[in-house]
Image 1: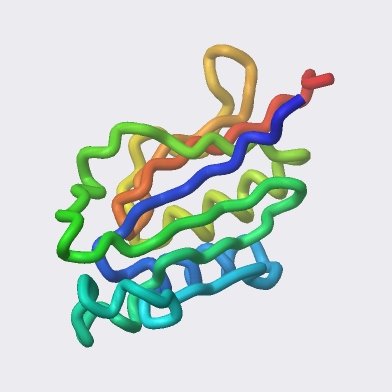
Image 2: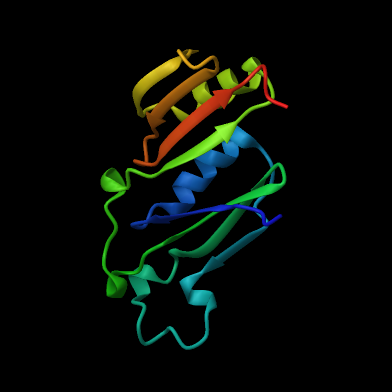
Length: 142
């Protein structure tokens, strides 16, 4: 079966966001590439953007959370209009609480972490970088 991984675009704060995600999930970045590291892009990327992240990857369990900064010549992204969510299923209530408490810090909570009407321990929120998350623990999962 294919593995599903998540990739997020940022407007110049990918390093800050991924440092934050690393503080919650732990682990080490498997890759960090800056625009200045890519041959041939020197004519398209300004000195100001040379330090921005072209690719960053953080393994989380058997999955990878990756992202990049969008250089000015490609336009901008609006993090507040993604309306797509990263959904995490945890192995325990404690793990759900740890991740929720970490990622929601400084963000906006849509649904607090609590028992849901459909029988799971669930939360939905936007982190301080505008990325939307769902955290869920299902005691009855196989």
